Image (cartoon, rainbow, N blue to C red; front, side, top):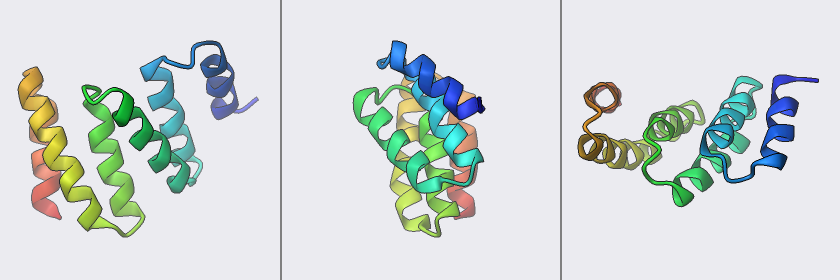
Length: 101
């Protein structure tokens, strides 16, 4: 059973678990299925806009898909959410990535 399949099984038991949803999206990305990863991260952020790591990952996936213009607003929103949460590390990481685009 692959890592993705294990995460899918866990998520079937706990469908609202934000971390499992995030981990599954990253598993899709690591398999090269960036479209599925993007869809899952977007859905996660719709349901839990305070899950800060998802913003950075979603922005990176947009860039990997050749869509840097779609990454910028994700980063801007993520930076604001990180500021509100007092997460200086995430804010700095996303600010640096935004500046590179």
